[in-house]
Image (cartoon, rainbow, N blue to C red):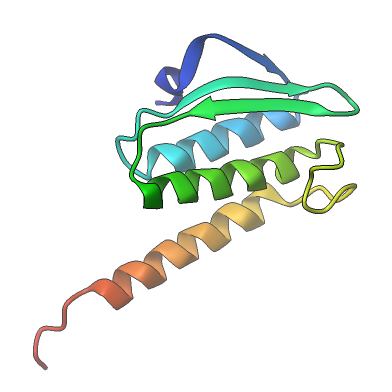
Length: 116
């Protein structure tokens, strides 16, 4: 499913722990909808990193993708001054579970009542 989300010529340089994390986040991005997401680069330079991507989503979808990509960078354990919490590797399962719970809460609160 995520193969089409990786742009031709995309450079991905990650270790064996990081690659499954990237795939999990790409699957989450795919669940946002048809936004034509393309990963252009995801490289761990140790220290430093390069991540670039493009998409054609709505402003709300863009915001969600930007948030997910920021959390991806934290979950991959990249080392750079631009990281939200340098030196902290976030638990990707915890992040993805929290996002799923937020989606369910949003779905339940936006569901129209049946008048009962």
